[in-house]
Amino acid sequence: MPLTSEWARAWVIESARVIAENRVELTALDRPIGDGDHGENMNRGFAAVMLKIDDVIDGTPADVFKLVAMTLISTVGGAAGPLYGTGYLKAAGAVAGRDELDGEAIVAMYRAARDGVVLRGKAEVGEKTMIDAWTPAVNAAADAHAAGKSEREILLAAAEAAENGAVATEPLIARKGRASYLGERAIGHRDPGAQSSALLLRAAADVADA
Amino acid sequence: MSVGLVIVSHSDKIAVGIGELAVQMAPTTRVVPAGGLDDGAIGTSFEKITRAIAEADAGAGVVLLCDLGSAILTAETALDFLADDQRQRVVIADAPIVEGAVAAAVAAETGGDLADVVTAAESANRPGGEAQEAPAQTNEGASSEALTARTTLVNKDGLHARPAADFVKRASDFEAAVTVNGVNAKSLLRIMSLGLGVGSELTLSASGPDAQDALDALVELIGSGFGEA
Image (cartoon, rainbow over all chains, first blue to last red; front, side, top):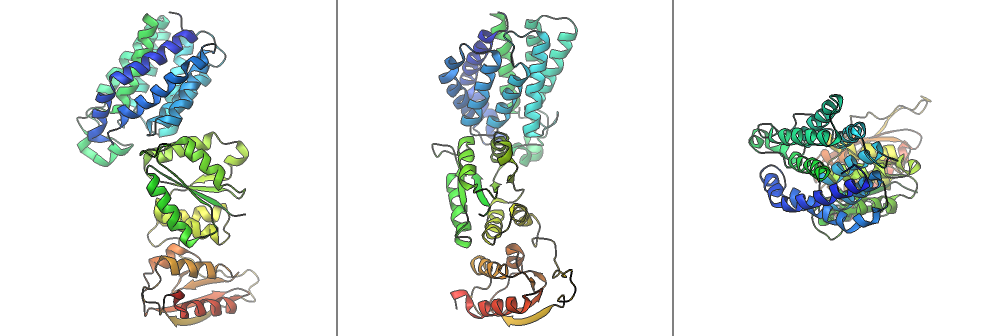
């Protein structure tokens, strides 16, 4: 499907579905290295988004992302709320006024989202956070766009890079968030935020395929 | 019009409890709790923090004290959404939430401005509180000679939090720079860090136009046993 407001809403609906489906796994990832609530918190946030998604049926993609941002900030209740909320808000800003996104807009949107998460959480690559999924995704999207790939291929490249990035958090020592209190005991555990980021970016590609 | 405080915690009970503790020492200061989610569960709520900032702000500014991780992230996000003019007078203190809140509340209660209250809160980060302050030399030079007085603590529990707060509030009534055993008498955390118990010898030193009045008032307060005998 073209990357219109309909795609943006489909992405959000698919995000809500995969977060609900994986909430137990996300919480299980969070339990040994965090406070064991990431899956439930994200699910609460996206369930709240689903109650309001029809409010933006006539909106632009930016309107959809802004709704997600404000709802996650208000309802997630953990660090993921302000982190993802700021990410979606910056993403909305990057595509403001557009009815349909092209490859350049996708790259700009993902980059803005990543920068928003960095602004809020002040994490860098290699610190076992969401950024370890997001930065490879942004780079892969930019490379795919530079190589002249289609929008669908750009989204796929970002999704795969995010998944690899999430897996690559397993051997890392955490430097941010509650996992950082654990030192070397965090080694061997995948970061739950990187995992949920990979799920969301996979959802974006999946619905574009439909 | 004084600076207000917002206590941001994952737990409603922690936020409310710290508010009660702070208000005991600073009864007229607005200390607004913003703990837990809207339904009382553990977490931090953007809406609660935003409402608390509005309630705490009388125009002189608001200082936020936060507990773990997402409390700070959610508070920072709430600040991003304030109108520019209000944003300028809302500050997240980099301070431990309990000690910072108590020190900030006493600083607000004694008429401190936004910067004073932030400094008081953040003094809780340093062992021993704020940097050592000698009695300030007045610029005029004429009345800069420090007056001193010696006395003994008579109340049985010594200068614990409540009497220390009374002491700081009394000292803050005067323009004079006052020290007690070498530390700033207007800094709650400095006073408490002296660990003064019953029978401790105190040396008060004051300089400034009302130095003698300040010493008299503080010696009288110490001699009264802070109502504890």
